[in-house]
Image (cartoon, rainbow, N blue to C red; front, side, top):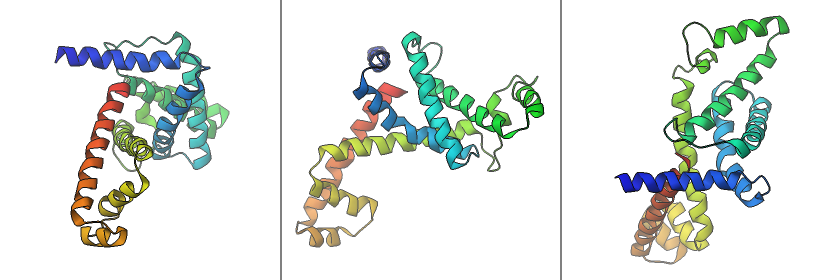
Length: 211
């Protein structure tokens, strides 16, 4: 267990070290593609409109770029996932503050940082009930699976992916999939098993980098 934890920390450190170089366009593009939907979905769940949520994505990414050269990852102080959450939540709060008249902004800040000692996120409107922290976790897991699936898809033969997509995602009967693509039912089952295992492995890899 200790060895796995050490490997996990090294993997996270490697990811963050790459991002310290803002000229590493490949790493930053991968980072953006992995996380922009997560941040956007989270902002929308917080009650922001489309334009505001897009602004949150851009401002969060800009803040990360700005902080990264001096950022030091310390797993004993919290996870990368939690740090990214805080970066996004403050940009959401900024968007909500922009909606208020100038005279109300002091009161809004006071509400967010009230004597409850609270997570500032608690003051963000949430008509659905659950806290935004719970939404973040849900969005995180959904985004992780989607990113893993996209990464696997790029490595697959298109026809193999279509077998999986029609059987698993579109919920076609295996016989229909086999007849449509001119393969055996057994090949459909094999494609599902192989790709499912690839996706699981990719999710595990991403979790090591971004937990």
